Image (tube, rainbow, N blue to C red; front, side):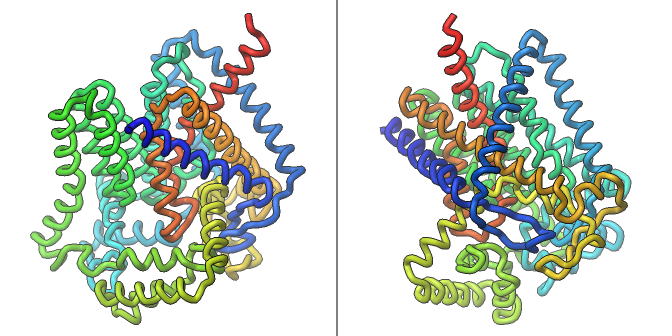
Length: 518
């Protein structure tokens, strides 16, 4: 029965991956803030250019993979620190060459952290305040406040810590891969090189928000959970539960990882043992909500807040309502949903919930079945094939003074200073467009190799990657309903790297044996 469930999960993900691959030959998903504003774009695929870039990226991938194989003769004590140090150096260069200043929510949470640090101002928790509406962002505000209390008040400090979390994620990708692919005779430094030089993650260290931090903790949690399933040491599930709780505290999609951990434990109950599985479930369940409970208890005990932070926050139905939009297929709805909560319901959670339910019901009844099908198709294809996690805006940034307006009438991004690099990538330059094409095609090829791995696993009845597949499917299902940004699926990029690298290695080894049987 368990094998049947696992096979079904593989087939479902294979279907979605196949959909993404097939759609990419006809539709190009784009996000370019300077040109289009903050909106998702789907346009007809430039097939000739698409195939040309595929050939180039594929050739480069093979060359880099063969170069990485030469590292196998060296000890991990030398290679791993060297690769991570190289990645650190690249990211330091990036944050100096592209000194992106915080904007939007990034600027808001940083301003609130400074208000709390220097003025002891917690008024954003009051009705009409930012944290009253979005209490889940208190974690990043608290983190920034603590960081700037200990270290100098400077963007550079925050970005350096982002780099450290990115390096942790890269290391966890390697360790997760080795834990799953334990039969490999190679040292497989190639996947660490891939993770440590993955362009979206390099540039997202420039983004002052919770994405990078949450990704590091959640990836680490999954690694220790898989390690526990294989080795059955209680300390591993303790680490997994603690890291999962912290990761979820920074981004509430940790519940997807929680479901995966629980499912993984239940799938392996015979090999682990009922008592250990029960203990692991109890530990995970208890620790999962400890950060949130502790936060509410401290805030109320110190009279900073009169009620639990989620008491009158914006309800989940607000994002579900944003997720149903025929024009932007679930992207930002230009504050329409905000107005329902803020103005119509006067920041009242219960009242706004009813209004949102009514709005959702009206949207579903007014839209035809074909319209809804088209919307959800566009929604899922854009989210998963855009390929850059909106790095162009959130990591690379733009010099606002160079903009002629774009669709939004202005560009909110700013640099602390400009230089030759910012000039090369400003506006919609060929360098910027070229990078977006590169990342788009790289993402496409990753899906191709993931599909290879999935089909190979089904044929060989090998389902060791079930935990990774469950997380990816969880994200697909969640963001099919939720408001979308391709940035929102950033925490799943480590798992896509692991699965795609496995598929690439499978193809490479197969071609090697076929062409050079000796």
